[in-house]
Length: 336
Image (cartoon, rainbow, N blue to C red):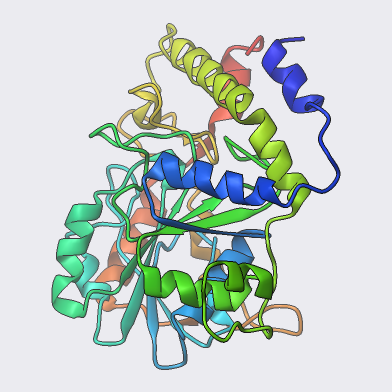
C-alpha cells in the first residue's frame, strides 16, 4: 500500500482534545490563499447560511448563480432571496462575463461563482461586469488543488472564498468548510453568526453574540486535515499525473480542458465529454431544479430568469452531453 494512502487510512494518533488544531488549519488555509481571515464551519451548508446571515440577505435581494450547479442554493433560499441564473460560456460552462450584466439588477447582492470541473473563472472580468450594479459580493465556491493561470491558488482573486472540505474532495477533512476573506467587518459579522462566544471574545469582538448557528469545524476533522495535509497533496499530484498520462493515449476524441495543464483540475467533480470540441460540466442536470415544486421537505426556490439568459440556457441544454471522467477512463483503460 502506498505511503500516502496508508497515511489517509491510518493517520497518526492524536490527542482527543486539541482546540488549537482548528486555529492551525484556519491559518494553513489563510497562508495558502494569502487571506487575512478564516472562519471554519461544519459543512458547506453552514458556510452559505453564515454568509447569508452576515450579509443580512432578505426577500428584496437577488443572488446570481450558475444554472447547472446546486451547491449553496438551498441555504440561500431560506433567506427568501431570488435566484437569478447567469448565462454560461460554451467553451467551459463557467459564468460568462459578457452576459453577466443581463442577470444583474439593483437588487443584486451576491454573485455565486462555482468552479465547474475545477476550472478557474476570470474574476477580473466578472468584477468589471458588476461594477455598474453596486458591486455585489463575488463569492467563489472553490476547492483546494487547482491553480490559476497566473500561478496563484484557484479563486485567489475572489472577494470571498468558500472551500468545501467534505467527503470526496481533492483535499478533505472528511467534513467541514472554510470561509476565507480580507474584509474585517464581514469577518466580525461571520463570527457573530457562527462562532462560539469564546472565539468571539478571543478575536476582540465587543458584545459577543451567543444566539447563533454555533457550528464550528469539528476538532477531529481539523486534526485529520492537519495531520494528512502533505500526504493528501502528494496523492492529488500523483492522480493528476496519472490522469494526464491516460488522456494522452491513442484515443484522440477527448476534450481535455481541465487537464491540459497539470494542476488545473481539483478532481472534485471532474467530468469530460467525448465529442470533439465539447465542454465540461456537472452533467448539466437539465436545469432540473428550475421545475422542482416546494413541499414539506423541499424548500421553495424563487427564480427570476432573464429572457436572453433563458434562451441561452435552452440552447446549451440541448447541445451537449456530459460524462463522468472516471467512467470514461475505466471503460477505455480498465487498469486505471
